[in-house]
Image (cartoon, rainbow over all chains, first blue to last red; front, top):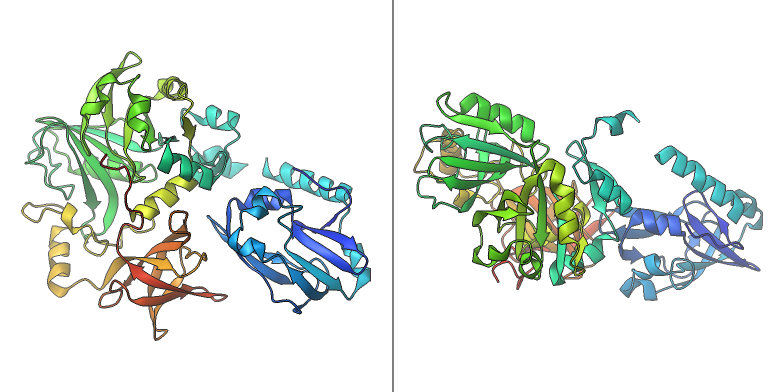
Length: 132
Length: 366
């Protein structure tokens, strides 16, 4: 599974890229692979206030519906509307073209609740051990 | 883990593993859900040729006269007028008229029948056959002897020509016995995808050899249960355990044309009673107005938001680029074109009752 070194991660398999007080959010390679072909995404409206680890996006794959959680509290400032017509970008380019939303964060200290790439890598290994 | 140990494996289990297939439990079997991805495998089946491992399915042999053997009284389709080397779809009913299984019967000879049943229901079906096939006739459950591959897609005939040179003579829902890789086997022109396709019943241990021979043709790719479910739903085909079960009658499931009321069979009295009183619910097809898909267990509501039924299967339809589903609704509702809503506690999605199948212009009868 691909992991981007300078991103931070959640246990629900979201990635977070920090640029000052704006974070870009998406789902990880592990998440897109586990979901399978994604066929639908429901994005929040801009200006929606979200709380850390609260559901803020719905996705559907061929097989099932799932939620994506906000990795940090704040205000949604931009969403990737391109995904609505091309949800397959979440599978094909989860770390770049498949970005989901940008959040202006309100609680910077919440960053400590996220995992580094190294920690997330170890977390994935424990999941794989459980699976096998 | 305990659960995994009890799952049965097809003769191609090692092959699926080597292809990095994602495996899932399905009716007691450890089966490939997907290889490269459900949508890619769907496209392969609709545009080229895919091979599905369906070795989990059960096969029975019955030898005897259609009526005296008891077979005619067990399954709902007409047998007496069945030409040799043809297949028919039928249901196996309990005394209450509920569907114990759906199956395909093959007439091998005047008094020799081959029956293909679902994997999850094979043991139950075998018990029912054992109990009702006459002692003077022969009943054999040969499921453990036979693997099965479904070769499906517009290129299926071209692909199989080198292995089965006489394949061209098979028309839809017929079969014959051919020598394939030195084995005399049944090949039928049947399937569960809506495309031109064949099912090959092959000696269990040698099924990997057949698999490898077919894959010498580079136009062929493997497809799993995920794609199979999307393909069958686009055709509006029922899946046992979803659209059919022991509490659902073939009349409710829209399968009356596979029931011959001119003969006696288990469940007939119950069906006649149901016919007289009118069915209380019926199976319908419907589509979503968006890319949102119905899911098994979603409730179905009419335009006035009154609950009218339950979704039995749902998926995203790649050909329509929207959600599609099947469901059981109360009789009197669910007319074609009727606007409906479906969903769970979180979401309600708009849709419309549609005609079956969802996918038209398939290569099924090419």
